[in-house]
Length: 368
Ligand code: OSB
Ligand code: MG
Image 1 (cartoon, rainbow, N blue to C red):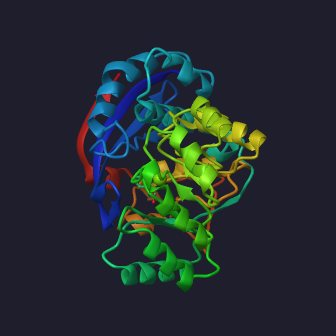
Image 2: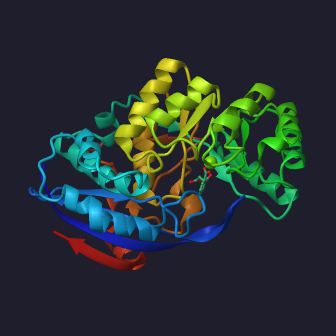
């Protein structure tokens, strides 16, 4: 294929309910959508998971647009590409900016899957026809509010409940949840809110039989996490610290992580995500697919990735209706009793509703 035209849109979508983590609250999701067209007219879609502000990592919507416009798109346009695995090679001269790279790479995987007449899941080597999903719940006003929310999601069938924690909203919260839901798979995500000095406090989490604790320490750390893991029974899962297969290898060798949260954007695309998956599988490290409050397009990519065999733990890919009044794909991503059925049609497997995309678009530019 040769990409002949790329459109970047900035979309703004109101979340149904604010989402609060240890680093801030989101009420609106601002993100970039990328539409790529090849010489035969096949269209592929990619979503940038970068946020409006650099809270989660250093990338933002604007840095992604800059990287795409000034560096990445010129490296892709009119080049012969036989397989999406070649995209990383074309981006070789550009360091990091993984979320920006992943935005194009995702669209090229979509085109490749369509042209080889298979679902994106099949193109990636996925084997499952349905995937198990969990849900990630932000910090609430009160523990009672949280218990009521969790109760609803457990009744809906979500297979695992993840709760955000931060200093002051941690031990009592997890104790109350465990008391109210003795048999539910529960985990905590700190988004780097603690330091190694907090080890004694974090160790108290061991009493609640959590599936894992996600990224308790600094967002760039793999050393202190290894020290902490030696002191804790609860498995540590790294999110923010893992940007590549090399990061995963080092963290596993050091004993910093027993489980890895794979986010396609954070690791620079589906090809690298798959490599990390394969490496973890060989090492006996289970993985799961994280979420970044994606619209239906990013969500569809997450669903496809999760069909790979070592995604043995439920991911954060909740249904569209959990986030949006109206998603930009049809049908929307639907969760039934904790499962999403994987679409079998070619490409990402969902139709993009262009009218809905336009209605959320606040800025747009075409490159050829
Ligand atoms: O750490 O996994 C995270 C949302 C925004 C930024 C980081 C994270 C999250 C979530 C929500 O946990 C996952 C989702 O529902 O998409
Ligand atoms: Mg996380």
